[in-house]
Image (cartoon, rainbow, N blue to C red):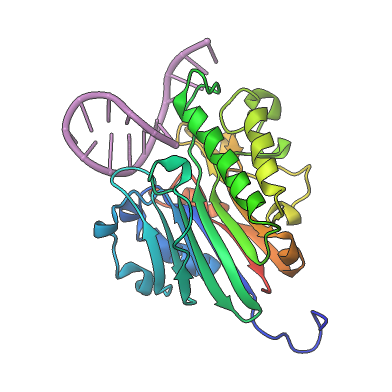
Length: 277
DNA sequence: ATGGTTGAGCGTCAA
């Protein structure tokens, strides 16, 4: 059946992702996010809250009552909050064997059929872009390679969405200065090539899908700038990918840049995609 | 080349 025209079978789905950088510190900001984006599903990273201390009543308070979380003390941690019921995918890998709470996968029953959604928090990788000198960088490369292999081994992905803080800005205009960041962790060739190889296991970069390659696009601005907007030394670290069979369902993207000015802002801003899936 | 700021939670480590 042709899309568009006549009566649409259902309203578009909105999926948002945000590195919240401490859920307990910024839980009040979730209302600002849901007011601005009205997502059906919200994926969070760096929740920094162990599961036993997760605020179980919060998801319902922001209108996203179905939730899953995987957290630990102090570091990492991911969560998925949803208006739509879902089923947790329980057989997902323990990435790099570390048990460090960087991934959650769920299966959503949507009008067009089931969709598998993956929420990732890829290791940042430390400061030195050399895996021999820096075990955090080695971990990052191993993690991305393992993720690529996971999706490559699963055959062509179908009705699958990957979101999260992938901690890599893959394209030249995903950073404020391609030349000056070539040796900076997040934009080194070994990372951008690894991320591209992962994406090419069958996914479309759903946000870049709408933004021309010659246009700068950032989702993160360091805390280490007096005026983040004036200096605008940003990077695009947060991503939404959809399997290629879903590319035609994409309707629009939003990077909620205003969130960087919220009181007590995260250094990342929310990213959202709307699709008829 | 360096430094700059923030969060968790009390040491510094991670980003």
